[in-house]
Image: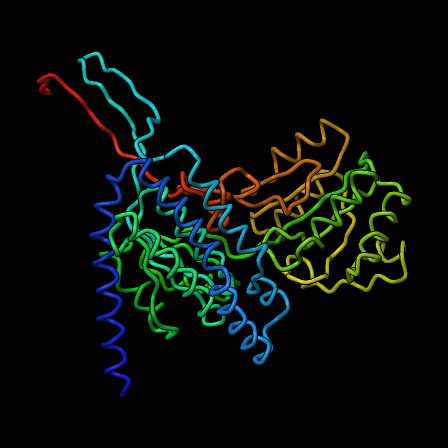
Amino acid sequence: MNDRAETDDIAVTMTRIGRAARDAARRLARISAEQKRHALLTAADRLRADSAVILNANEADVAAALEHGLAPAMLDRLRLDQQRVEAMASGLETIADLPDPVGALIDESRRPNGLEIQRVRVPIGVIGIIYESRPNVTADAAALCIKSGNAVILRGGSESYFSSRAIHATLAAAFAGCGFPPGAVQMVPTTDRSAVGYLLRKMAAYVDVVVPRGGRGLIARVQRDARIPVLGHLEGICHVFVERSADPDKAVPVVVNAKMRRTGICGAAETLLLDDGLDDGTARKVLHALLEAGCELRGDPRARGLDERIDAAADDDWGHEFLDAIIAVGFVDGVAGAVAHIERFGSGHTDAIVTENATAAEQFLAEVDSAIVMLNASTQFADGGEFGMGAEIGIATGRLHARGPVGAEQLTTYKYVVRGTGQTRA
């Protein structure tokens, strides 16, 4: 087949998907909360029933990924097991039992002329979600879009193609069995990269917002090429700042967990900041715990002076997303120094302070301008599931529409409903 024919095929396929999604969105906006809840619970049961099929598909993806030398962090995101399938199903159940955001009254007022004005939550419409090696995003995104009354077009990465397709097939069958329109949850049926380009540049008539989830290369491309609004973040440059009053019994487990629980997720800490006023004993405990956990440390001169196993940090280690068992370590001048460092090198994702000083805590929480700021807690809690959303389809670091974990409520907008009794304007 020649290039022109392939391009035409992509255009035909994507236009068909877009039209089906737009038609489904009109119908989904009017589906009741109970219908959505029942559909999500049914889908959760089907995921469990189809777990063997899903895991077999995942084995094919993992085998291909190993053959092609996929990075360890990406491989960790790709790999599924029974526990992760159960987590997907449990996430759907949690989303099902959340309050339905659609139709929720945000505020209301009565004007002197008698007009009653309400602001009410409504679905955005059609959501396009582009993701890489996380097949669980297929389930999370579909569930959140159904809950918020949106149609969704899913485009998983080639490395998770078989896994995502198997999960989608299970969900689509469950939703169809509950009477949902076939265009409610669709997956782009090709790994051809031109399909992504077509979605980003030529589907504004069908897609209302795009949510990218993946590495810097994917997200940068989406933000650069999209002719549709984009909701997402570029990198997760997360910091943990251990302030001089920190309790070492809190600091050690928080820092180790923030870095080492799962090194390949966007909420993993990439930089450890230590207060100039922190005593060397506490600093050594924190550094020693990271080293013993198998983490490579790249530090400034003072950090290196505390443990000879710490390598020298290069200039580009600050503000670098390692997505691996590597962390940059540096000393800063109190809260002000930490805020300045984060402002210079951070990505606006998640930053944490460990301290027993209430004044220092409030200064950090107020002055660090990130989507998520934390006190005495691991940055790995930067997750919609941990926030009670059941799941999320990404962390938004922009300042418009949504910020932080993007759950069902963040996938709605609002409209004004005005009720009168015959008023006319002079």
